[in-house]
Image (cartoon, rainbow, N blue to C red):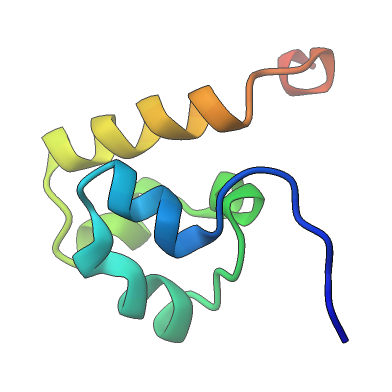
Length: 75
């Protein structure tokens, strides 16, 4: 079954953010399958994968680019 997605795939997103080496841990360990699901990932999860603080900031920056804040996120 094909799912229509808006925006880049998770791998393309990570590639653009220069974080593609985290694709396997995100997909296999945290079961993240799309860019939108990154909003549920905690900083501790990323730290346990070995992601550095600057890499986390870069991930957040690109996430905000593709998934901008909505009014629901401000509640």
